[in-house]
Amino acid sequence: MSVPTIAVAAQAVKRIRNHDCWVFRDELLRPDGAVPLDSARGAALSKVEWAVQPGDVVEVVDPRGAFVAYAFANPVSHIALRVVSTSREVPVDRGLVEARLTRAIARRAALAGTNARRLVFSEADALPGLIVDQYADSLVLQIRSAGMERFRAAIVEGLQRQLAPKGILERSDKEFREDEGLPPVTEVLAGEVPGRILIEEDGLKFWVDPHRGLKTGFYLDQRTTRRRLRGVMRSGAQVLDAFSYTGSLGIVAAAQGAQVVCVEAQEPFVELARENAKLNGVERRLEFVAGDAFYWLDAKTHEAARWDWVLLDPPALAKAKPGILKARQALHHLLVRAFALAKDDGQVLLSLCTYHLLNLVEEIARIAAGEEGCRVQVRDQWLQAEDHPWILQVPPTRYLTSWLFARDARSAAWPTSTRR
Ligand SMILES: C[S@@+](CC[C@H](N)C(=O)[O-])C[C@H]1O[C@@H](n2cnc3c(N)ncnc32)[C@H](O)[C@@H]1O
Image (cartoon, rainbow, N blue to C red; front, side):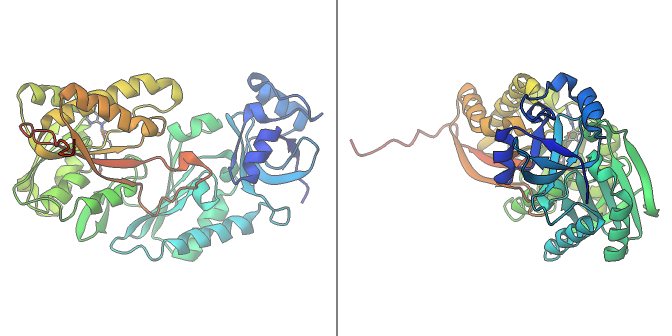
């Protein structure tokens, strides 16, 4: 197979050999192999001098011209190369994509208790830029890279052959495609995909709106959290589910007999959550508030309201590094409020998908607890669900972490050492 060649800087070669899979635009070398390509001029130079189009498969070589990997190239994206294969004998073609689809699907076969799961998770399944989610008999896919775009037909045929779904919907939203220079796509690619799909998870039922819902319709990555919240709440516990979307966390709580308030900014999602509550026969135990959770938490703090459980599952507070300061302030604000609103020994769940904040959460929580003047136990911590595996060498694939904090009793003396 003859494909264009792109030389990359030594540090990128080292990373690829250590199983990283991204090369950034400023790590590309000019065709003479020496000077790093000016990232601002990358697009124009790449097209003219290398004749590489977004989505082309290229051979990545080191500064001396030795083979390193095959990759999807996209000179207009800040991720210029996405490695697909590091073996010269394994070229990137339809057969490879189909084989990896088969393997990704087989890996999820043992996931029990649900008919909704992520079947393909992009780089983690060695299919860069491809997401495939299964909701009962329907599949929803997202294509987030120009390279994977070329394999759309092969992916659809492979999924039909292997899973015979009733329909396949593409939900390739703008936010994931802008950087790749791709237009958004929402289109039924095969069969029929209803406006609402009924799914089941551990005996609870949920409506999923694959056409207009967030992500591909449901927070499959929060299955671990739903499972951790089972069997831990007493009947009658007071639970606040802030940023509630489908209400899945609140419904898990209500199914244990808890009284739940769900707060969600978008009215259609409040309706969806209300229907989900009815579907599970717990509507009498849930109250819904359509509004801004930040303001609502402020108001409740002034009223000195208290909950046994405060569940915080905010949207991404920053999409990229430049937004980190604001995101940090927002998280600090949320945690100060949550600690204030928790009863003595009350628990605060934080699920965070703001990648650039994940390593800072404990520091932010410490400062927030200091401001609220309370001692906080960390009772547990977990990650995205197991059908969203992450790659050790590609840290951004670990994008969701949850913490379970507990507020020590307000009146309790701090435990002090008796050994002096
Ligand atoms: C990560 S999702 C929550 C998923 C939810 N826990 C579930 O299981 O379905 C975040 C939600 O927060 C909502 N949201 C965003 N900003 C908000 C705000 N300021 N106040 C309330 N809700 C907000 C979004 O509409 C979205 O539904």
